[in-house]
Image 1 (cartoon, protein in one colour):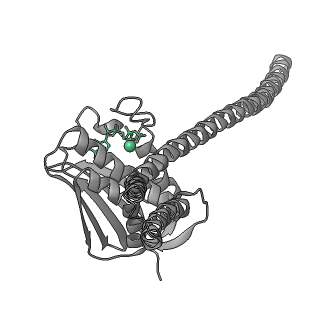
Image 2 (cartoon, rainbow, N blue to C red):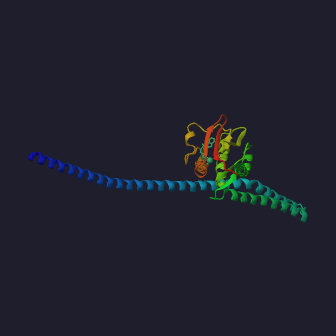
Image 3 (cartoon, rainbow, N blue to C red):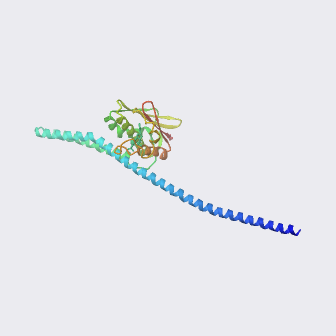
Length: 289
Ligand SMILES: Nc1ncnc2c1ncn2[C@@H]1O[C@H](COP(=O)(O)OP(=O)(O)OP(=O)(O)O)[C@@H](O)[C@H]1O
Ligand SMILES: [Mg+2]
């Protein structure tokens, strides 16, 4: 009986000790978890900051590349009127030397120069309107934005003998930063122009379609340059991926276009190789009037 009592007492002590150890274990685990969570949280924050910095750097670099593209657009648009102004000046000189230059003739020549300089000023205004950084989201028409983009490249495409075919089945309203959307379209159009030129395609074509399906607005841009090479297909939207020489390509274009369409406008930008070339497809939610 006495032995049983002692044994029972030990038994109670043992249970008490086990509970104590268990509580201590729980307590230390909580503490450990807490410090582990803290560490994890600070690591996640650090990585998030790094990612954000990388994104910002990429956007800044893309903007620089866009400035470069804008300058080459302007240089191209100005080439022709500058040549024309030059020839008008030569005509004035010639008329003067031949003693034909009277007030009326001089006025005509000056009017012509004035018209050309107005045209040049106009191109700057349109670039300012469409390409200036602007973060304001608005509702705009797909057709209108596409026309704005085409206005900026049509002379360039014409000079490279690239035929652009536009088919608008149904226009729709979409929401986003219009200038950014125009930039994304310009990236795709520029790439098509580059590849058509690089591969020396005989009859160079770009076909653009706008339509609506299942309450979504679609824009397809297809060229006939032979498509994206299999080995490059999965990489073309990666930052810094380019098949062009350093002076010709930075590899930012499509990465920036994807960020604009998918991150800023919640849409989708995909590509597939069709029979004759690459087809880029943008889909966006249709806005109600
Ligand atoms: N329409 C196309 N057909 C075939 N390949 C294409 C087409 N568009 C893009 N590519 C490929 O995708 C790559 C990446 O394009 P992206 O616009 O991102 O960069 P890039 O044109 O090389 O340089 P940049 O940043 O100056 O535009 C191109 O180098 C090219 O190889
Ligand atoms: Mg490009």
